[in-house]
Each structure stands twice: as structure tokens, then as C-alpha cells.
Amino acid sequence: MSKKAEQTEKKLLQCAKDEFLEKGFLGANMRSIAQRAGMTTGAIYRYYEDKNAMFEAITKPVLDEFNVVFQHTSSVQSELLDHNELESRMPVASRMLLGFVEYMYRWFDEFDMLVNGSAGSSLENFADKWIEADIEATRLYMDKLVAMGQLRNYPSMRVIAIFVKQGYWGILEAVASRMTYEEAMDYMRYLIPFMQAGWKTLLEEGGGTAQNERELRQ
Image (tube, rainbow, N blue to C red; front, side):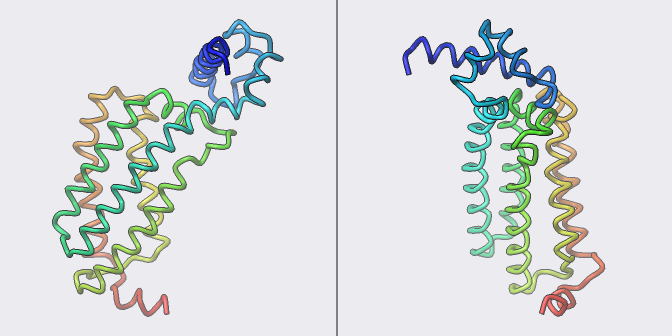
């Protein structure tokens, strides 16, 4: 691709981003993006087959980069548990959540598009991959606690899945509400201990015992 074509594509994606941020994926249209970019609609199709391809070109690299960070942090937490370092896991989890917020605000426009304007696109359920991975990681974590004799209650996987999902959307609420960075960090100062206390209460004082849960799963 020539330098001129690269510059044209860069301008096109910036105009598409402005359109998505203003109207969301469903409200955006190729004709309007073309007008913003000073191009014909037909010229756009030489770069992208449809608006979903443009939406992905803008947001997917940000998601892919975060997935690498997410997998690394998850592996660190797992290693701590393998070495019975339970007390060390909580600070690591807290740093992971704060790092998540830092990352979201480094790429705020892209996350604004994903959280507030991705309905109808191929990335509408962009957080599902993280949630599913975290549900499985939480299950493995709790199984290890059971094996170590350090888990009093073992909620059903349905309950775990609900709380994991709520946790992620609790964090994404900072973008959904379009908080400033300062507001988001202040929000996390309350949200993190709230979430940690909730999980602690759920696992220590919940309704089902670990033994009962194991029997139900057999």
C-alpha cells in the first residue's frame, strides 16, 4: 500500500471513529462516513467491505492487546495459588483491576465505542470472552481452595457466573457513564473493596457448603 493510500485509510478510520462515537454502530452509515472523509461511498469499499469491518479495524487491535495482558495476569494469579500464596493473590487481583481501568482510559474512545455503541456489530458481546475465562479461572481457584481445605462454601456455577459477569460490568460502568479518569479511579477505590468483600462473604458465609457442592456435581 502506498503512503498516500495509508494516509487516506488513516483519515477514513478517524472519520469512521467519529461517526461511531456520535451515532453508535447501528446509527452510523457508510454515506455519512464517506462525507466526513471527503470520499465517495464507492471509494470506501476499496478499503473496507462494510461498516462492521471498519468498526473491527478500530476496536479489535485494542481488544487483542488487552487479551494478552489479561492472560498474563491470570497465569500469575494461578501460579500464586499453586504455591499456596493466597494472601498475595488479592493484591494482584486489585492491581489487575486498576490496570484494566488504566488501559480502558488509555483507549477511551475505543472502549466508549465498544461499551456504548457496539450493539448490532460483531463485537457487541466483546466482554463475553473475558467473562467466560474468568468463570473458568474462578472455578479452578475454588477447586484448589477445596483441595487445600480453605473453602467453607462453594456456590453453584450459575451463581458464580452471575457474580463474575456483574463484576466486569461494574468495572465497565466507568466507561458506560463516561466518567473522567479521576472519577473512574475514585469509583474503583470503592468498587474493589466492595467486590472483594462480596466474594469473601459469598465463599465464607454462603448457603451451600463445599461438600454439598461437590456431591451435587458428582
